[in-house]
Length: 131
Image: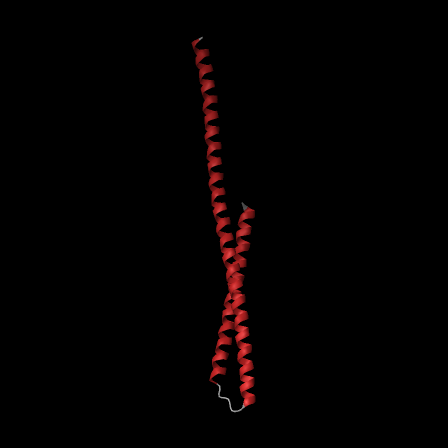
């Protein structure tokens, strides 16, 4: 049970780390998109500036694509971790129910055995009293 709780805690920590990375990547993507907007509004005065602007826009677009792919991968990892946590929590709950059920069965068995023992003692005392 303790091992299972540790695994759930480790998964939860990994989930928080992945969500932190997602947040950072989203912030980076937003900054790239803002740079792209600024660059698109920039006035070009000669052919060299146009060429530099075009290359920079292509660079920004590639970076945005890379970040979007990384975000997609991070979201998939996040989903897998969430599913793992759900499965482990369900298993933990089932294990707890099983443990409680077994404990109750042991208590009932002990009470039943005690009742039989007391019944035997009563019968012996009753028989010896009647003899």
